[in-house]
Length: 264
Image 1 (cartoon, rainbow, N blue to C red):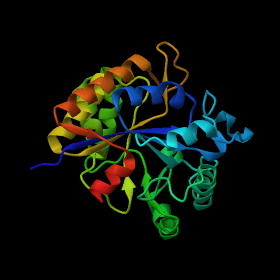
Image 2 (cartoon, helix red, strand yellow; image 1 turned 180 degrees about the vertical axis):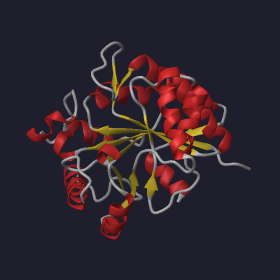
Image 3 (cartoon, helix red, strand yellow; image 1 turned 45 degrees about the horizontal axis):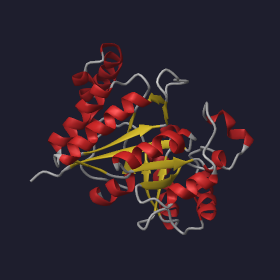
């Protein structure tokens, strides 16, 4: 029997709309998510004001989220960098603020800022990261075959908006197992239609694979500020679809750490 599809929301940076808009929706629909926190950003470091077109969550909000079993808190660096030093300091300082030894009972997760962490560089620091209870790193896309064709399909799908093209372009990023603690994710930009995401999720169901959808902000309709803002009505539509599919036993919605634990 094939595995049930696993779908995960992964939100980067620690933007205030994650608390004000996203969190109430997650509770309403009983949908887990992973929030990847840039520690310096939420601690008010002035050098990180450029990181997002919005304010960060404050530490009180993050502490509240940390207490909710729906939410996995993970690290996104201190200064939004991919160096070993920044990864470790971001994790350590955030854990201090949360008065915790680990982000989850299994250990800690890290989402690569800008998904720019190179696998060779990660492998060189992996032993030291693992010693700090860091269990997984979340990167972005991957191509298992015909990368030039898949990149071409990505470009064409941006214009035509055909769900089948979107699915073909991104399906290699879905996972059936995890190697070396590396998770892959699909960046969801403001222009992506829900029908495109549905096509990918349906493929995950058919293949019994895991799919991490990388977001940054959920915003009110018509108030998009950059490519990383996703409109509220579209996101609600996606949430309702996931709830329907979950009720049919076609998928589970889980955190990134849960995907790692099930696929490792």
